[in-house]
Length: 424
Image 1: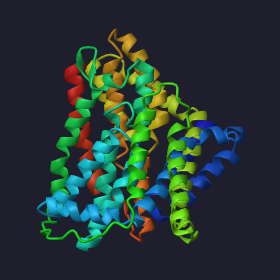
Image 2 (image 1 turned 30 degrees about the vertical axis):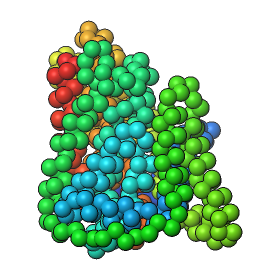
Image 3 (image 1 turned 180 degrees about the horizontal axis):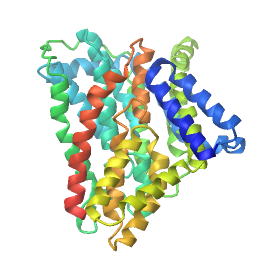
Image 4 (image 1 turned 180 degrees about the vertical axis):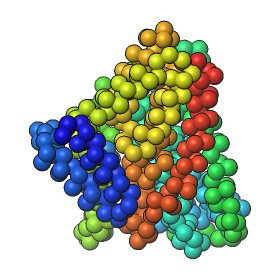
């Protein structure tokens, strides 16, 4: 059998299993990666390079810092303060989602989810309501605004490097509105989606702020992580593992601090046990499988086909770029897809004798938002579901689709229209 066809079949089978057996995703992903290696679709020598160590380090380090943050009781206090500012549960979820969106415009989406999710969990527990849709709303909102700035998402960095954009260009670029404004409009238009999904949650909130913070140092660690990530983004030639080293470094400082403060290693061990190793394993397997289908030529073949079908009308080509990007990013990691498709966008633009920005921006809008359709379409979604599973909650694919599909469609359509009218 042709290696590309075999890789495509295995990839499709893996994702079907991921969607059906949600509680065994990490086993399925690692097994699929092993099959790719045994069959030679992915060479063994490329295993180390295929794994995005920066993401894994950032995820693991943030998990430790977040666990310290939770044990400090700060999330419970923040939840109580938030509940006093909003009229009911419905608007509390909207406030949390918008808050996570703003943070994710400057910090990695996964880190954002791990920072905000504890607040959502604490709020849900106090009101004795289901936290599953709350955390899903936080995750999809984090994905949405990752494309708003240069530092919000890896795909933004890829775009900036390809077309020559700096941080400010995301807001004002070559005399026109940048991609950030399209993303922000999409974020505002998702508010009605959240209000509709939580329309039955009209329970009044009359909580008093009674939770006492045990220690403020973990809160400063959280804020320090955000600040350091933003500062690091200002250096163009920073090492590839910079963000991961920052998150792990802050986590180590937190563990050492607790060890000295309590003079007992029990809390440190409890924190390390609380790390969601299943989520880390799932992402590792996905990284290997994505590299495997890339090596087999699956992504390149799709890109070539897309280029042939899209040649001709600028509007048709642009519509196909956005639509196809939304569809494929719902099932595969958007980083290799964007990296592969950016040169295609340049080729299409040269053929149609237009600047590359229209197609490149449309690609980013579709690829960033497409991950919100399925539970495994984005690392932030996987992290959010991991938080819920660690707390003992089951997350079905239906639970996710109920929020993810309308959220994605409204944000993608509105964002794509803004890009078209500004850059066509």
